[in-house]
Length: 208
Length: 201
Length: 174
Image (cartoon, rainbow over all chains, first blue to last red):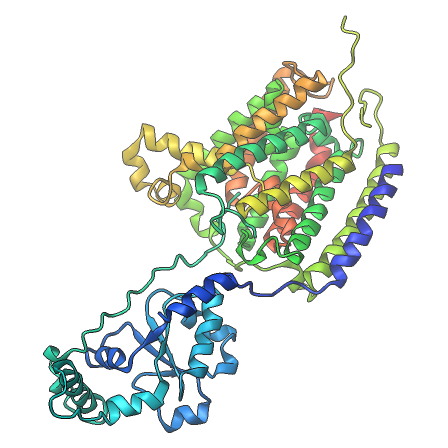
């Protein structure tokens, strides 16, 4: 009986503590601050409008545009096949499978790149891969794809090629029904981002 | 942050090595508490020796407390640990058959290995029976596969069933366990036998 | 008995329970899973059948489901754990002077009876543990520690049945 009393005295307080303290449901950050800073300095998360336009023209199925603006703004104008995840709902459980995956290339966009970049920072710290940011946001998209600036006479060839590409992209994306207008020859030349296969941590197996 | 092998802090091979070490600790603790004795294990059901009750449930509540504290201190990610699934009918059916095996054989698989390691021949017989039983199940699998896979409830947790937090559930279990231990101590005095010494500290 | 040193006493059960609980928590911390036992005979049977009758192993549903197609049965966590159990039990028995070949039973029955029932009990337990997806260590103890309903259900069924049948099996033990 004596040892039972000792056990009770030792274990009941522990039980009370564990009952009283709320459960730790924080989602831990997987990257250290240093690791994140390195990635931020390299700016590898940005994708230019040209790259995105190319993927859209190619009807690349791995592209998933994500609009992080509010629902109203999304409904007024959005990029082709984009889905809407307002920034404040970024951590909601319904979007976790969209953000934490290794099949598609997610590209966040907002009006400038601010909100989109913040979405990227948070998801990157949670350890998610395959998320990118549209450089310059919709503002820059408008300047380059929707209203490409014609380069002056005598500009280097690549400027002219870029302009031709953007005109073609404009045709293909800006309302023209002729998607074949931009021929493969006028590609923007940037390599498509490689999808990082993440081993989505499935938890331990067990049995018996 | 645990679990170590899931977060790739150790390799799967190291994990197997740890399995061996953990097994040594497991076997040692079982034996030193007398779980290598079938009379002691069966004694649970006649009241003359409630060691099984005390060790088993103390371990269970320490386990509950330990897991929650590790999670609290950020040392273990509870979403990554294995939780055994609930297939209701086979859990009950299997449990009933195991209960019969327990009272007739006097061992469960873990204790039978422990007892065999110190030379108990009845434990060896039990282990032989284990293999036969597994083989029968395997060979006749199509006959009971349906039953085996029926009523898959997923991975329900008891605290969700009664609508409380894990911590609170743990506390309730502690109270229940302490009450059971108290009853067990009473039973040991009442049902003691002349030909059997509990032989414990 | 001419030996004058009695076997050492067993440990205080509450301390023993705490130790066992700590081993359990350690297993979760390292491997993400708790203790177990019945999976080891299963792995060995699957490995054995694959070695002896490979054709059967590729067609029969049980071996297909739990065999090498999914993962090598001999590399199973539980197999290594059970090997450790043999070592650990032996060490403890050796230190306590409990190493002895013996058939444990009630004094009122013969060794033969006891051994027959041990085999029967083993067959029942082996079958039941597969059906119930675990035994007292894996399903009941580990399951309770993670608050799994399945664990509690299996535990209640095992202990309830054993209590219920205790009267009929009493000759074996008392």
